[in-house]
Image (cartoon, rainbow, N blue to C red; front, side, top):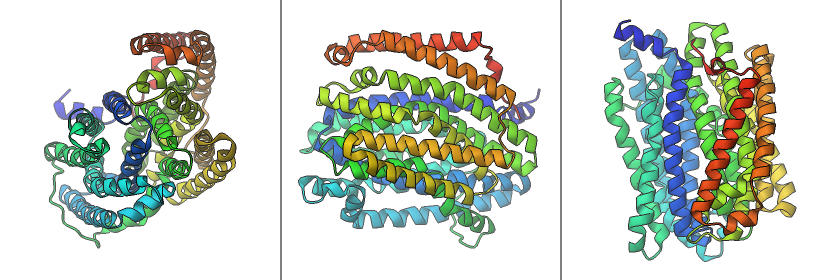
Amino acid sequence: MSESAAEHDRTHDVAAQGGVVGAMTVLSRLSGFARDVALSHLLGAGAAADVFFVAFRAPNFFRRLFAEGAFAQGFVPVLAEYRERGSRSALRAFVAAMGGNLALVVALVSVLGVAAAPLVVFLFAPGFAGDARFDLATDMMRITFPYLAFISLTAFAGSLLNSAQRYAVPAFTPVLLNATLIAAALVAAPAFDEPAMALAWGVLVAGAAQFLFQLPWLKRAQLLVPPKPNWKHPGALQVGRLLAPAALAASAGQVNILIGSILASMLVTGSVSWLYYADRLMELPIGIVAVALGTVLLPNLSRLHADGNAEGFRAALDWGMRAGVLLGLPAAAGLYVLATPIVATVFLHGEMRETDALMASAALKAFAIGLLPLVLTKIAAPGYFARQDTSTPLRYFAVSVAVNIVGSLSFIAWLGHVGIALATSLAAIVHAWLLIRGLAVRGDCRLERRLQHVLIASLVATVLMALALHAFVADASHWLAASVWERATQLALAVFGGGALYLVVALALGVRAGDLRLRV
């Protein structure tokens, strides 16, 4: 097979693409664990930690809303049309216009964010008003907010590379953020009167590093085009019509997490941090499974739709659902049963206290209930965006946010921060159900016999795994009192033993490697 033919064949091997993204994401999430270990050691779950997480969450939220949400869901399907149906010059002109437009918008938003930092802090953490946390958060926000511009351009570059079937570099790029923040926590922090300020500067440096890292790879893909703003470009206008609804519809999870953070700022000190640490642990399986699947599904579904391949479109979504269930269901059960051991092993050291570990593990259990629905949401949503349908998922997004707000306000009085996490999971369940039902109604998603078999087998294997893990894990006091090495050793035994049991039972019930393969 010639090199060009081999390359063409690989572009259709969706499972292999998912494997590449998953492998790079594992590296990213493991470095993220190391980052959070360093942050928890330096800050614990006190006032400074709450402040930094708010200052970091604000630009991160806008990045996911305007860059990943809008461009990954609204930009990629239009880009696929230019790739499949247009000329090379038309493609480059489109990329130049979108790059220029995006650069202008995020630069303006960054300047406004710095100028209006007190207002941004009040919007993201109204509970800080009136105490010392507000002033510190404002100072940090002025440093971290320009991160939005760099990371938005990074996300844009990543979308271009993904569309060219080059998934490894965008998936690896977050490692640079994690490495920079680890260096800031371990090396730079002692030089600051307020150690958390070193982390704020680390965020800004990491944003620039991630953007610059991707430029050589864009050049190799012949997509490094000088930005040329053009608001009247036909492709830019087409993206513009998809932009706002795509940004919101793709960011339901982030909006719900933001709502939880806002409400948590009004609770006791530490609530923001407890939810942050629990959410970070959730990010490992979501990143490896959901983000990896969603990343490769969107460009491939967009290509299949542009080619008019309805059968391949359905096959890709069916594969995504099978992979999501097989990998997401045991991950959810494992996080729930092992919540305290995981939190204690990863975070209980330095400034972190036993009470903090217990509070974070309680939130993690509540978050774990919604893990599989979150995975399925990431898989189902590209089925709409690939068809450039943003209005339908936008309606479902609105329902999800409403459920989250009502749930949070209902649960918070008697469950505190755990009620916020539980409401987030409830919103994820409703959101996933609406998306999947909508795909089924239009005929894009069917409960095929193969999917039914995988669902039943995975459920049985997960139940047996959860029961075994519950019997193996001692009470919480054991994990809080044990040394770090004892926790790590026993947790590793539980994870690998539980994973092996799940795999053996799933294989015995007829699940095969072919259930995770797809070539369309």
